[in-house]
Image 1: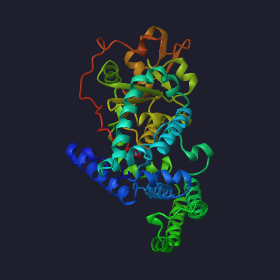
Image 2: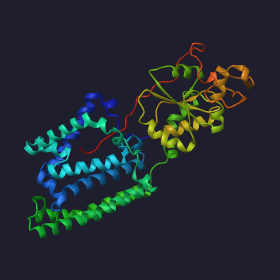
Image 3: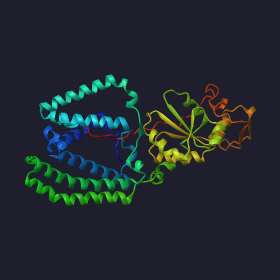
Image 4: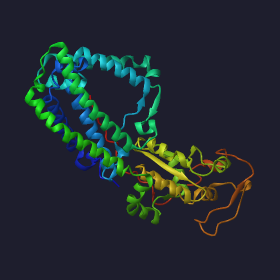
Length: 421
């Protein structure tokens, strides 16, 4: 579907990827130092309203990155599903933010800017970095005493569009407009605070610099709002949109039956400890309760998107199996999961009907012999047995798998991550 984020390790190898990370880090540090963010006095001044350069630079970076991420996602260049969004732990996040804020005021640095200061030989940066490392060590040694709170109020990958139940474009446009207004307010706040305190403007606020900045302010603000409007108008791709883009490549796998795995291969996979088999039963709840494979989870159509979020972060050896009475609904679910960037997804060949035809004891299941191996088997249990029936997880010794395995682990594309500090 989308070309980005790039799987750098796969494209350039480990050393090539690390070289790119190094260049990005050096560039980021250069920009921070050029903006004066290696100076603790300048950084701390934002908390007193004297110099809001930190706020303006960082907030500009945020809204530019946000707008470009969702614009490239809207036009199909970026797979946003593979962009790392830190999971939300509400109360631990709030408390942690307050602690970091206090440390920022006292020390004059955040972890990232302290590294910049240390690199340029500033002693306060060196002491701050050692303080950070000491704090990390102490946290690691004591987290066991408050791990319940540390892992509390977990909300997963929770974003503002989900919080307010509005479109992504609406959130992007609102934040950009709000940022422009805050930038205007920040300029006036700096002027007023410095006038009240009788302090001279900082070097970055000299008349010539301020004049140049103001001449660029209107074009810059206009460009950002235009960018956000583009995101709003185009909108984010739906699951159906993603599938339509993937269909030319993936439909061939369906036509060639590459995604349909025989019951005996699934049984051998179930007992293969090198793989983590996750089974989703997409039938109705009544049919699921009547009989289902051992360890299967019932998956309703409305749960697919939420499950996809977790599956994208699953270990690389995870294999997802979709189970239906036959194959139709499972195939449609396969399309949705693939459109949501989930890998290593397969469908039970012939569905539960073929599974029963392969493994069940015939004395308690009424059925008609199929005319061909792929024709659905008609069956009926006398009671709802769930996974208690012997056919739910038969012994692989009695049913050895012979043939070429269809299950092949795709190379996992880990979500691209990033962030300050």
